[in-house]
Image 1: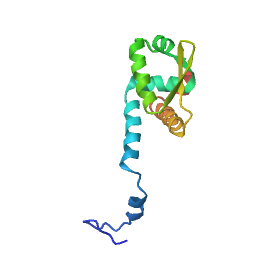
Image 2: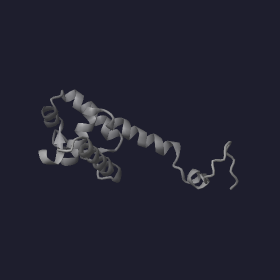
Image 3: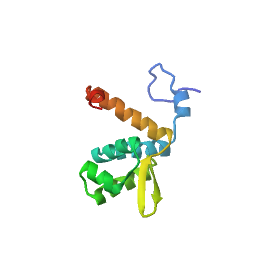
Image 4: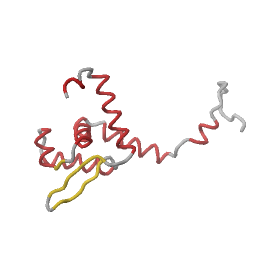
Length: 123
C-alpha cells in the first residue's frame, strides 16, 4: 500500500490503520471509561468486584442515598460492567463476568497501588 499521508515520517502505519477498531468500538470503551470517571461509580464498581450487594447495603456503606446509588448502578449496568439478579423483592448487583469488567477491576487496583502504596497493608 502506498503511503497517502500528507507527511512521510518514515514509519509504516498502514497495517495499524487497517486493523484499527471501528468508531463504535472506541465509543463503547469511552463510555465505560466515562462511567468509571465518576468517583462514586468507581467506588460502587470496586465494591461489586468483591461482593454481591443490594442498593440499601451499598447506600449504607457509601453513605449515599438509595436513589443516588440506583442511578449509578443503572449507568454501570448499561455499559455492561455490572449485572443484577432479583430474589423476591430484592435486587442484587455484582461485577459482570466479562473480560472488560475484570480488566477494569485490575486497572483500578493497579492504579490504587501506585497512588496509595499502603493499600495492601490496610486490608
